[in-house]
Image (cartoon, rainbow, N blue to C red):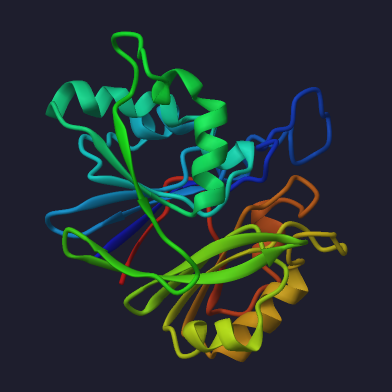
Length: 254
């Protein structure tokens, strides 16, 4: 099974509009980050977790030819704004796109894309249908198993996911002891680490490393990175060998 990091940036992406900091002006491609999203693939199935504003570009950058379903973590704009572009897959495969999401995410999608869900839909709009999941859901898409994990993004409930021995956590800074049991023992942990300084709703670099230590993961990948973290190369030099800052386009096998 394979995970591709489609985007590893925070809500503004990197570079940030009008910013002239060293990171935003960096010529290192690993310092350029689209909004956070991943592609999970088996030999037969392809699933995208979150469709942010850069979804179209991510599909083109990674030459993605097929998506079997969309899975959502939460309803913030940087994780849902690109859903309209799933219509390309509707047109190609002549089928509706299944969406796996909580009820609160579904409400947000219906508000954001009212023209998709209205009684009199305009021709050519995306065709999707919902599969409702909650914090205890276990579901399978094709041959890819998912287990939902509830985490907190300040006070907002967000779903992380365990897929076999990999756990994907974005937009979080708290996991209850009960939910943490689902994370424990995973071999690969992908976790948000916004910056080095304290933040209201995201793990810092130090906090993300502490979570990884508690989990006992063999490999840790940091994502949802802001320009305040520092340059990819410089920060990477200070990390333990089993920890890596993810970058757009990085692929890992699990």
